[in-house]
Length: 208
Image 1 (spheres, rainbow, N blue to C red):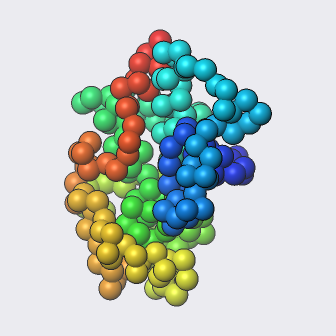
Image 2 (image 1 turned 60 degrees about the vertical axis):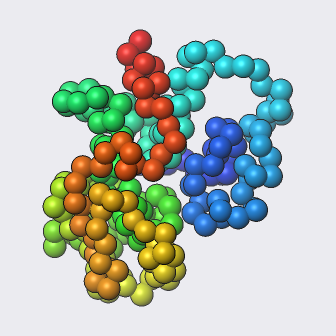
């Protein structure tokens, strides 16, 4: 599967806001957005006002980059959201949040979604007792995500765990840090999704 392999900080600068793609670095003075608050490129500081379409496109690109999806994957997820009951924009975010790589990140097993995707792909996690190696696997209410016992000495996981116990996890998830496991309690409501995005702009973009 193709993946973006460029600078993650460049993505944040393009959106002129922190997307927290690099974990702890985003909370320090080394964050590229803090140091250069303008888009990258030769004409980054001279970009004009965006059109309505440009605003919608940037919002879609921002959400897509946050969750680390390619365009085709994101469009397919939107198509699924359109076919479900409820507000399409909110359903879209709920589907993105239900991806296993995102859940692993939200539970504190990884500092960012890129790391979570790699950990899942390498077979470090079980869902309801069965190994799952597909980052896009959709978890459901009641599912239990657990780190394999042989993987519990991985440094990046333990380092992030020690911080997550103080930061806390989203209300729709429940963690047992002693057992290296977490449970999905409910479908996340919009207010439970920690994302500064206007999903309605994405709906408008794809509805044209």
